[in-house]
Length: 136
Image 1: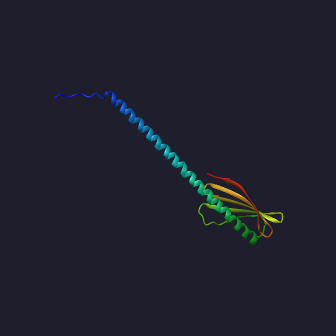
Image 2: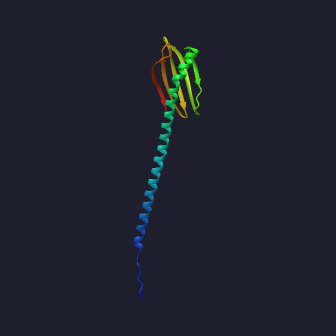
Image 3: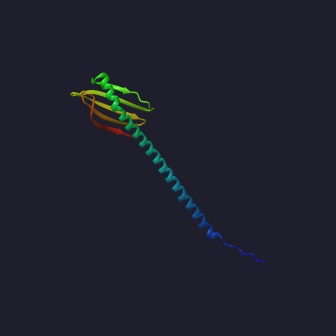
């Protein structure tokens, strides 16, 4: 019985190159997916921080109204206690004409936001302006 030799020398190099190219493409795709996942995690964290900042600024209105009703509209800074870790709310109260102007500054983690609230003499909210926001 005769055996035939099959020549694979030309084909083996081509197959190796195809496998290496496929591995390079697959690793590039995996790296791209990892980068996109990291970006999405950072974006989600920033969105959560912004949401918490809005909630803290919403809490500034009743806190400012209570502080004005309790201690009047003399100029002062008030630190508001919050039940949230890594969060602060500071109110700067100043008389403005007949009413009061309160500048609220909120921080949560690495993000900051502020607003200016205007109150009438009977402590009704007459205006609000978002003054600043700073993210990570």
